[in-house]
Image (cartoon, rainbow, N blue to C red):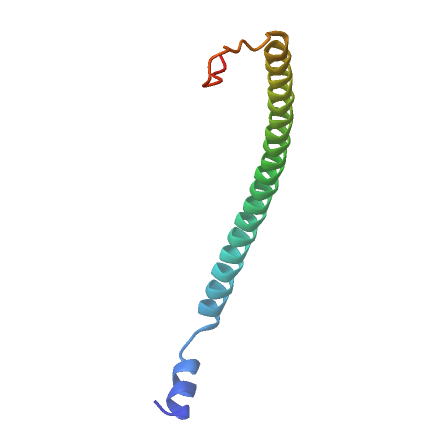
Amino acid sequence: MTRQDNAEEFMYIKEDDYKTLISIYQQKTFDLFNQNIALEAKVATLNSLIKELNNTIEEMIKVQEKQTKRTSKSRSKAQSAVPEITTSSEEGETF
């Protein structure tokens, strides 16, 4: 196609066709813009949810660590309260 062919093709498009084309472009642009806004809002909501869940997880981990420390302290206290029994045998076994 030459430049003149393009110009001739351009001349065959009517003004009403341009109006229709522009109208469709405007509608598609509006639709895509609205979809973009809706998706950004959803991303913001989900990011907020992720932060809340991460905070909950961190709190649960702290509680679990405290419980683990308490359990290990009570075990060590219980073990230290029971004296070790040793035999007088040569092997030196501990019960």
